[in-house]
Image (cartoon, rainbow, N blue to C red; front, side, top):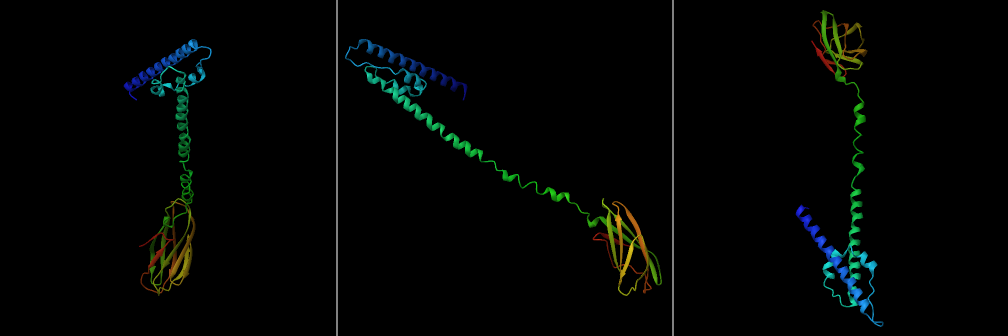
Length: 235
C-alpha cells in the first residue's frame, strides 16, 4: 500500500469514528429529552448502553445505514440489533477457511523422496582386484634342435597382492616335455603349458621361466598366451 493510499485510509477512518461519536451523542440527547419531557403514563426510551459500547467498534463499517434513521421516536433503537448481527456475520466466515488452507499446506512434504538415495553407496565400497591389473611378456631366451628355454615376466599393475596363472598353448605336433621351471609351478597338458604363482605384490613384477624339449626342429612359440584375462605379449 502506498503512502497516499494509507493517508486516505486513516482520514476515512477518522471521519467515520467522528460520525459514530456524533451519532452516540445524538442518541443520548434524544434519550435525555424523551425521558425528561415524558409524563407518568408515556413510554420512555431505555438506552442499552452495553450493546452500544460493544457495537462501537463496528459502527464505521455500517455507518452509512445508521445515518439515515430519524431520531424522533423510540423506534430509533432498531439499528443497534442490525449492527450487532452484521458484525457477527462478517467475522464468522473469515475464520473458517483458514484452518483448511493450513492443513493442506502441511501435508505437502513427502519423506518418500529421501529414502531412495542412500542405497548406491554400499556397492561402491566392495572392490575386487581386476584381472586386467596383471600383464605378462614372453620371450625365448635359448633354443636348439630338440629343446628351448622360455622366459616370462609377470607384472602386477594394481595395488593389492594377486595370485596369477599364465597359460601358453603351442602348435600341435610340438611334442613338448617339461624339464624344469623356476619362480613358478609348471604343468603340461598336451601342448599347453600352465605356470602358477602366488601373492605377487601390487606394483611389482617377477621373472619366471621353464625348460622344455620339443620334437620340431624349428623355433616354437605359443600361439595363444593368457594371464587371467590380462594382457600377454609374445616376442
